[in-house]
Length: 320
Image (cartoon, rainbow, N blue to C red; front, side, top):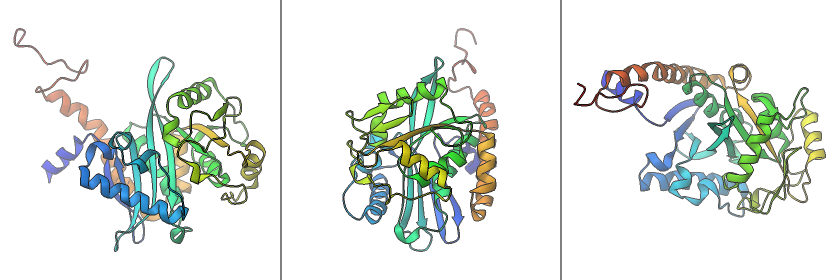
C-alpha cells in the first residue's frame, strides 16, 4: 500500500474517479492524449461523441476533443460522468489549458470548455460538478494559488453560473464588475492564439470593450448556435436581460468571460454548488493533492538520480 501511494504521488497528471451523485461516477482525466494508449483514447472520444449525439440530435461538432486528435487531447482535461451500473456516459466537460503571458510571466488559463448533458439526465444537479469540480481540484493541486479561468457562451444559464461560482468575472451584470488590464490582456491573447479551443473561426470579430465575440459560430461549433428563446435561462432575470442586451443571437454572438478561481470562489462552490454525495470523495482527493504538493518537493530533494533545475543541482563527478 505504501508503494502504491508513493507511486501515485509522483504521477504527472490527474486521473481521479469520484462518486458525486448516487449511482453516478465522475472521472477527471488530465491530458488524456498523453496518458492513454490508442484504444483507450478512442474509447474516451467515442463516449464524448455519444453524449454529444444525444444532446444535439443532429449535426456534428468537429473541433477540440471531437476531432480525436492526440495533440488536442493532450491539452485537455475531461470530466466525464457515467452511470455506475451500465457505464453509460451521460455528461461531460472538456476543459482546455491555454498558455498565455501576464505581466511578463507565463500563465495558464483554464478554459471551462464545452459542457454537454444527456437530455434524459438533466435536472439532476450535474452542472455544478461539470463547471466547478475540476477547476477546484486544479486549484487545490496548485497550492491554493488563484487560477485564471475563461468561458465562451451565449447561454444565460451558463453566464449566471460562471458569475456566481468564480471571482472577478468580466463581463457580468453583477455590481462591481469591471474590465481590468489583466482581463483585457488575457482576452486579446485568447482571441489571437486560442480560437480553436472553443471553435471560433478567424473571421469572427471581437468587441474588446464588451468582451463579445461577434459571428462566433464559424469554426467548427456551428451546431451549438441557439436563439435566445432556445437558450437555457437563468433563475435570476438579470443574467437573461444582460445576454439579451449584449448579444445578437441572429448573428451568433458569444460572451468571452474571464475570472479567477480563488479561496472565496472555492468557499462559494463548496457551500453552494457541490453535491453533498461528492463531499467525502472530494475531501479525500483534496487532502491527497495537498499532500502531493507538500511531499513531492521533499522526495525530489532526496532523489539524487535526476536534475530539478534551481531546486537542487546534481553534483558532477568532478565536484563530488
